[in-house]
Structures are given as C-alpha cells and as structure tokens.
Length: 72
Image 1: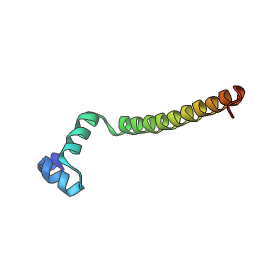
Image 2 (image 1 turned 120 degrees about the vertical axis):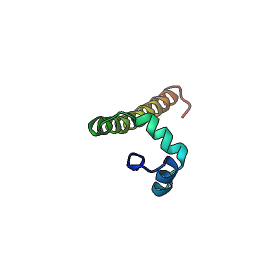
Image 3 (image 1 turned 180 degrees about the horizontal axis):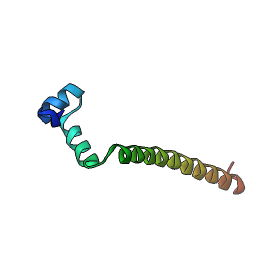
C-alpha cells in the first residue's frame, strides 16, 4: 500500500497493525523477493521445531540423570 502512494500510518491502519510493526517488518524483510521470504519463513519454522526437540531431549536427559542418581 505504501508503494501505491499511501502513508505508513494509513497502510498500518488498514492492515490493523501498529506503525512500529510496519517499520520493524520493513527493516527485517526489505529487499527480499517472494522466494527468499518463503525460504526464510521455512527456516524459522524449522528452527522452532529444532528448539522444541532440543528442549525435550534436555528434559529427558535430566530425568534419566535424576533416576540414575536415585532421586526419583
């Protein structure tokens, strides 16, 4: 919308986001084409999944360590 002559404030209001969010997104995604953006979003999703997996493994190791030490 900003590319169509609207101000950032007008575009933000239409999309129901704050101007701060608009500028944060602009800074983060500026210059990315559609393919790059899709790849970026895919990597973000994968990163979230991997973080969950690591957290689950860390919890499993902690439980096994407590069982081995007889704290169970």
